[in-house]
Structures are given as C-alpha cells and as structure tokens.
Figure 1: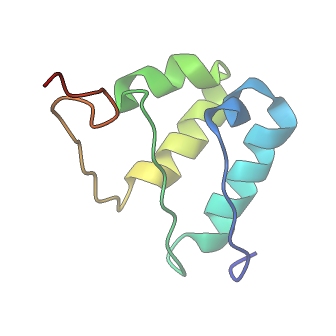
Figure 2: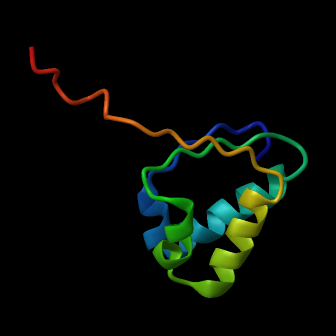
Amino acid sequence: MRKVQSQLSEKWATYTDTRLALLDILEDRYGNSSVVITSQLPIEAWYNFIDEPTLADAIMDRLTASAHRLSLQGKSLRKKKNH
C-alpha cells in the first residue's frame, strides 16, 4: 500500500470497513511514507466523529504521533467579494 495514492472524503468515518481500511493504510505507511489529510472538521471532534473508541484511539494515535499540523484561519476564499 505504500505506493498507492488514495484520497478519502470525510465519509470514511461513517463506515466500519472504511475505518479499518484507513487504519491499515496508516499502519503500513507509519514511518515509511507520508499521509496528507485535509479536513474542515477540527481534530478535537474526530473522536466523536469516528464514533468507535478503539478505532478512534488507534487511528488518532497513528495520525498524531509524528504529525505536522497546519491550521488555516481566516475568511473563506470561496465567498464572493462584494465590490
């Protein structure tokens, strides 16, 4: 799986099979390759969003152990400018 590039939407957390697949990907890549995750959901809300404590702990442990987090703030660039 290290050479496979994939993209997941936030719907991954709603299905147990998808959560397990993500955990497999994270375990395989841990210490070997990068994982980039973007989300509008704050990290603090992920445990409740995953909604399965054991999987949430495992996923979050692998994601945050050696993570570099960038929190973007400010107004949305998608909103139309009023001229």
